[in-house]
Length: 432
Image (spheres, helix red, strand yellow):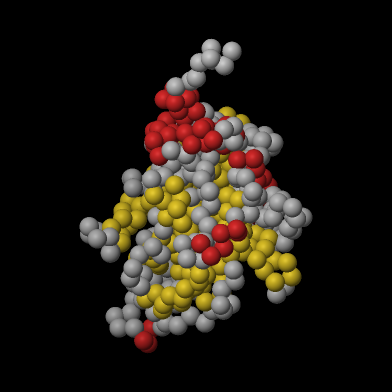
């Protein structure tokens, strides 16, 4: 009987597995050493990327604080990549960093980068814990506290050949000095905190959530420069964007003023799409989208460029009072707005000029590209009500939590090799 069996050639097995959703591949890894070896080979990963070029599983998150741990405005996932039955936010709630211990109640979502998220946990008023991990695979690495008290700022990652190979946690020190941004940076490569003094002609307090791309953090900062200390001082009422590459070698920040609108009552947001930082403004039903670019090959100087012509929403039949929320991380033709008149999320296609109002959706509904999406009207309204009386002094900045196309182990610091808080990544993928 054994001699009559026919084995599936490795090449055919690889082609079959590469076409499956990530959840199924994770399960097949535990079938045998051979299947595990096949699915972890560089060729298989490259083949999988070629068949699933973009991760289409992502959520648009409100950056909330303690007692409101995580709030999702929009959840979207495609059936072909991860095949998850529920939204990403639901994999964080409830938060259980250690498999055999009770869940944690007092925590909040800080930031995300390439599928990893940073969660802050408060056990008591003076006792807090920090975790970075993948909520779908239930892998969590506990981050030690920094040498001195400092505020949570952002999370950046390094990606090589489609895989996250390391991450860095960034905290901003209190009592900032003029022209210097003082930060503590924790690296998964060393397992240690380092102190950095970053130079910036715009003072940085790190109070606003950043956007991140390719290991860089970009923060919106108000113009708090002192006039009597500056030569040729020109105040920038609408603030600056301060960027820094935490995987770079120098200590110089990049600073660029935000585009100056025609009126202080402009409504605006900072977001990302297709690997670029995007700035959106709406004033008197006129919508503009700007893309951050560089004017030299070295990328040392930044500037804003209009990504398309201005759109007059009233002239296309969408005469609605809206705030910009964010853009689709994979499609810079798709924008998300908040309608103050209808208290709901609006999806806009900047290419076809079609805008659709979305009411509350309890269940997943079909999206135009074949995936599924869900809109959270109630929590979005609570968040956006905070901008009811705001003028241009505020910028809407939401977090785009995007799962990568491949699920690998969370990078582990060498000095805490046992801090990967899941005994088996494959068995922890939730199915309900």
